[in-house]
Image 1 (cartoon, rainbow, N blue to C red):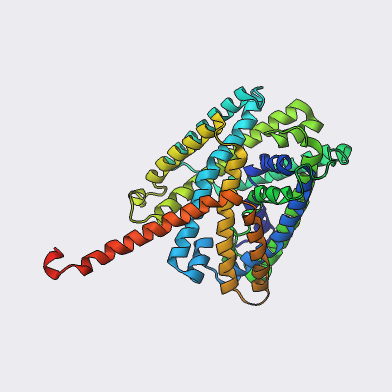
Image 2: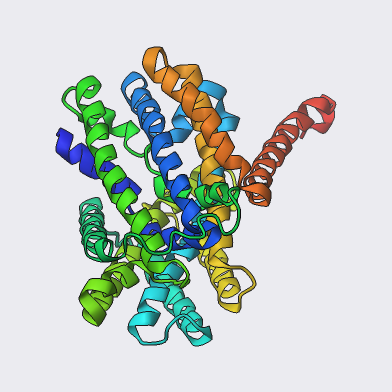
Length: 418
């Protein structure tokens, strides 16, 4: 059975990941100091989000995660679209995660963030991706406990980095406060939302608590307190220390303020380990989800395996293509992050709409509050909303095609059906 403290740790582990190694810097570059408003707004939004998903976990204890709640509220087609959006987010976001680790390794090799550094980062990303795919193909996967330990180390490193780097520079780089305009705060929120995805992850484990109605809210409250302190400190430190000097390794820059090159090198090792750990966990889940979303297709042909290999092949092809595009500069890391965020936001919109329909009492109020706020963040995705829109249209077209194929035989004369 889960205790309150372990439940809180799992929540923090679900939220904290490799995005923390780069995304804060991307937000600061996009908006400047005004990005602090985006951090504050997303922390406020997290409260009703967490309450709503906790309510779903307690009142509707089903396995299957967000898609199961969407299925209960809106049916199979909506659930399939939700699963496809989540899968698209993993497919697009995976190469971005690999590239994040690649940048830290490139800096460790002394290549910086120029053209040569980017090339090394892409090569490292490809190597990480290949290793993770091969490991999953032969059935080697990291335990969730090991991944949680890596997340705990990252939390500790971020805490130390903020404590060391922030005090002497707390008043630096705050002017001009909105160099790209106040509207840029919304763009920053759209980038930062990646760091707030995960409140839904624990809902399906509500039944693991001894007294879910009491223990789950306490675990969420404790996790929220940790995340609020961690993210607030990181937001301020990122602005005051790295603003004006765009970096692909912002956490290493923060550590470097207090510990010099040895601290930077240690952070790079942690970044590589955390990146591969996260990729390993999500790759297995993505392969299974792909087979589940497309049950009657080539993708599901070996779905009997622990981790289907056919989806792994698709992940290898798409991941390689995106990493090459990132390496050549055809697309930037911020493009991949925002496209991934758009898919995650779409998942949250449907999940919260389901919560509004399924929940009752106070938890339903939380969902009603959170839904329009998430829609506001979605509006700042602008053209990147085309990604989940195209995915949804593809699912709808596939479903319509299957329906037509099932109906065709019944329209033929009996003598022509065989």
